[in-house]
Image (cartoon, rainbow, N blue to C red; front, top):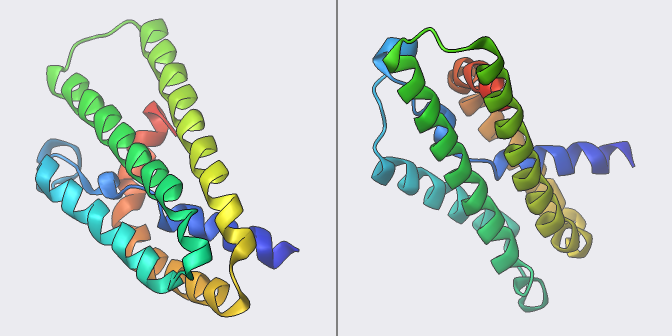
Length: 163
């Protein structure tokens, strides 16, 4: 059961948005990715997950809801990150309580997106065979090793605002 939970959590991370990479040079000395770049990264992540799963015709019926949830989460993160970067670039002395309210709003939005993603993953996950689950676990571990370090700085920054 624990392995199942770990695999589900890893799958959620893999299906998350690549928008954590969208950092300005002011924030982390990294180039900013355009919306087109971010869409391409999301498209690649979606395609990679689907290819790794090798869905059966019966499982395919669950895919559209999952893909929509992955893309919605990606778009939401991109929008929140863009708003955060705008606030950082303005360098204003914003009201502490307004900042906390915005953080609470962002956390609520992210929670809603995550619930939608979990709700979309669960029915598909229940139909996966052991080989498909193993491939998802391998994919998640591989992606986490590659993505986690660059994303940690952005995630930490986003955590202040939305995580």
